[in-house]
Image 1 (cartoon, helix red, strand yellow):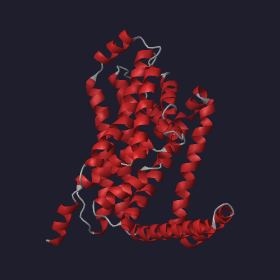
Image 2 (cartoon, rainbow, N blue to C red; image 1 turned 60 degrees about the vertical axis):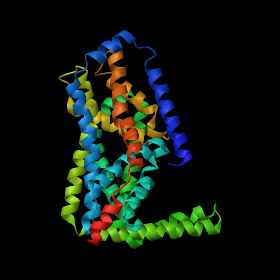
Image 3 (cartoon, rainbow, N blue to C red; image 1 turned 30 degrees about the vertical axis):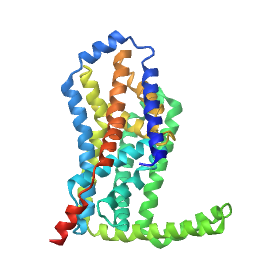
Image 4 (spheres, one colour; image 1 turned 180 degrees about the vertical axis):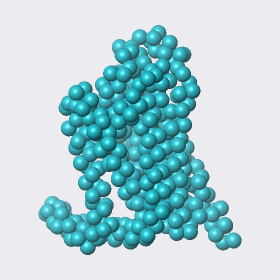
Amino acid sequence: MSKRNKIALAIMLALGIAIFAFSLRNVNMHNLMHDIVHIHWQWLVVAVICMLLYFGIEALITKMFVTSNGDRFSFRDAIRIPLIEQLFNGITPFSSGGQPAQLIALMQSGVEAGRASSVLLMKFVVFQAMIVINFMVSLLIGFHFLAEKMSYLSLFVVFGFLIHLTVIIGLLLVMYWHGFTKKLISWIMIPIGWFVKKERFERWQVTIDEKVDTFYKESVRIKTQWKLLAKVFVMTFFQLLFYYLVPYYIMLSLGYSGINVVMVTSLHILIVMVISIFPIPGGSGGAEYSFDVLFSSFIHSNSKLALAMLLWRLLTYYFGIFAGMFALVAKPDKLKRKIEQNN
């Protein structure tokens, strides 16, 4: 991890502590301790298991893509990928650091750079497609609730959805209309060339063309493996489902039974969409505020609401960051895999 990333990590941890302290400013500490002591730990364990399944399923998906051409890739190496992704997503604006970090982690495991890029792109396509589908369903279920509670944030939700939809449309264009997409990109690049130096502009063009061509070649190969894609789509659905269910089990752990699991899950999907367009890493500040406002209709106790928010952020954000720190220093099984291949 570079010095810059270490500083970003320290800043995000400090910011998290400050946000938690601010969230507790109007909370009675005696009531908070009472709520902690009386947590139904079995439901909190289920919430933790949901996050472990979220990471585990993504590791299996990565392993399936990497091994689809016969390469050997251990689960130990595979689990490093989503954890490192969580770490760098959590400390970079718009989660921009996750993809490059995954690429480096795969290369450390012995996966060739072009192959690793293709694997990550295909995984990204499936993930984005499933996010868009889930969001469309949650929009029908919970958008009216969001608009009523936070009308000003409903515009951000729609904007976030349009961004994700544009991304998936762009990737599908590369997969099915490769030639047209390259022409479209060259047209879009023309006005950009007015503002940058010629040498830099030409480097950008070459890099983009190479990435588009690499993704297209890999997509052609993957499209012939429709059974693999079908499995990955189903697995991604359950991966995201486990993640979206975390607030529901946290609420059960605080003694709130009989709540509408579909509504709670849909609201969590909408919150995640809002977080995705916040420039601050992890959507810090906006995430906590959105959770407090939306789930205050289900949790009427100030101390329990604050505790629910703290548990939610610890599980869905900080858990991944700390696990990613351990994954980052863990050595991959590269040497062992080479020996196996030589044998």
